[in-house]
Image (cartoon, rainbow, N blue to C red; front, top):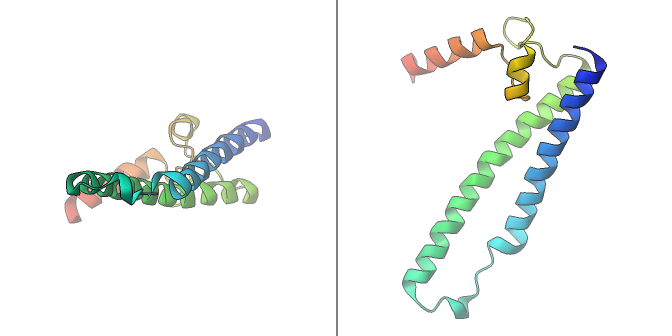
Length: 120
């Protein structure tokens, strides 16, 4: 992979990271605030709590994605971006375009998913 491609992936990953961090900040600063006076009804409070729980689960998934993005950015810096963690082969540009934080080539990923289905 040439430097131009690496730089494009780096910018893409940094943008994804920035967006996730902005959403997390927005959630913590605004979306989770509950005005008790507006929530006099038990059903309203339950609906807001359900929405907040969903939002927190979503942010937790994004937190895990953020770790993968950081790992990918570190791999770019180390020069190992685009190389499969298991077999050492190139991951492939099409796969990286679809999932820039991929750490396994398509064959290794398919094998991993087959094992997960078999063994749970």
